[in-house]
Amino acid sequence: MKPTPFLILALILSACVPATAVITPTSTLTTTPTPSEPTATVSFITQIASATSTPQIGAETGDLYTANNIQLGTPTCDGKPTLAQTEGPYYTPNTPERNSLIEPGVTGQRLLIVGYALDVNCQPIPGVWLDFWQADANGIYDNAGYHLRGHQYTDWNGRYFLETIYPGEYTGRTLHIHVKALAAPQSDMLATQLYFPGVSANSQDRVFDPALVVCLETLGETLVAYFNFVLEK
Ligand code: FE
Image 1: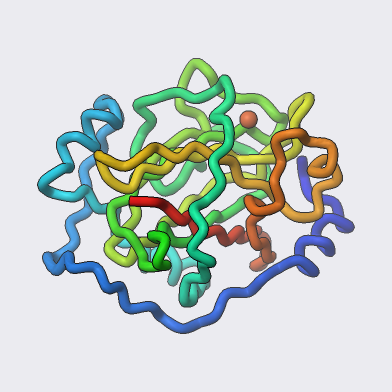
Image 2: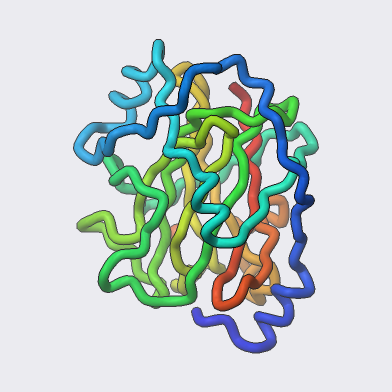
């Protein structure tokens, strides 16, 4: 669904601009960050299992934030773990590792989803595996390939950065983006969904929960969605 002028206004009114302070992670990880290799052909279970002794950390996202004029402030968190929701019928494992789902053939309103993975004490968690999947602008999932699907790991500051498009509606559901998150091999997998403010279908959707609505703002031609995942490690 392409946002209408009314929706754009609603998005602006509902925007929550983050603070600009830069956080200092308290992680004890002190070695130099090393961008991870693509692991498209390896199952995530294997990836996670093999990361037990050496946490797999995502590519440093600072440059992506800078290039897109996004300032990610001090993470906000009430200590409550992010609400779990059904993963639905359209999950595909073994997705490519990538920060951008934009590739030839992907059309729609450009959307950036950014934020932190935090523990229940609101401390950033590096190396959290995040796997996103969504419908295209026409509300259609690619169930044969990896169109609009991809996983990544949070960076050494616990941040993630996803470049994608605003999802389309499909019958029976309001607009949403699916995500799975795993903080560590021994952790419980979180499956949940992210929603958008100002979408009329939210109120008719039986799965929708307002706790999972992103903060949304417009930045030029781009929509920027902020959401922090809070995970029980
Ligand atoms: Fe869905």
